[in-house]
Image 1 (tube, rainbow, N blue to C red):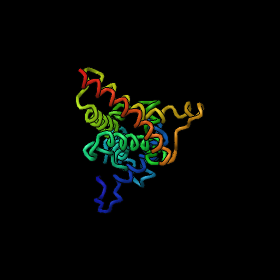
Image 2 (cartoon, rainbow, N blue to C red):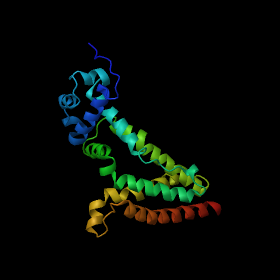
Image 3 (cartoon, rainbow, N blue to C red):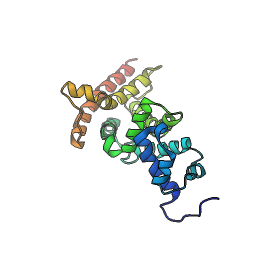
Image 4 (cartoon, rainbow, N blue to C red):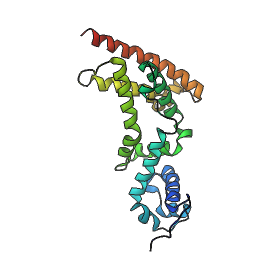
Amino acid sequence: MPPPPETSQDTTRHRLLHAASEEFARDGFTAASVRAICDAADANVSAVKYYFGSKEKLYLSVWEVAAAEMVSKEPMPRVEDFDDPRAALRAFIAWFMRLVLTEKDAHPIAGRLLAHETVAPTPGALDVFVRNCAGPIKSEVARIVDAIIGSRLPGKQHGDVVFAVIALCVNAKHSREILTLLGHPPPTTRAGINRMASVMADFAISGLDGFAKQQETR
């Protein structure tokens, strides 16, 4: 028998998503318990199948929400919002570094989900992350790079340049422990992150301007 209709914002489906987010983020997909999710959502154990079809589809629904939130909680800078694409790159690098370095506090569910997926990938989950988060980030970096250089670089060089900019931003997160041991721990405050981002942006812009000059002389 289907559940009775609900008119409040606190629907069973919404409660299941919220409870599942916490359960999957804490325990990962495999160890997460459907019964525990339903208990936390104050729902019948059959509710997951009714609303989502399966535990796997519930997990992907959690990912859809978590990944999309990462790039929407603080709006992503767009190249068309700036008169100078270099200013767009500065704003983008600062935004991106705030995203990755404050992930634990600003996006706790997505950060913990990613940690689990790094150790034990689940079919389809990272595809959702790429479609909703990593993909839009890569596309915007490519647009900014194109605006600064003025024309696409030949072959794989364009992709190499785009991912070099991305690597600048994510390196501080993934190399946090090593950087700390080297005496240069990544900043944790907004002001500190913005300062570091400014240095990274200067570095990236100098490199892109160099590529642009190379294109002009060919």
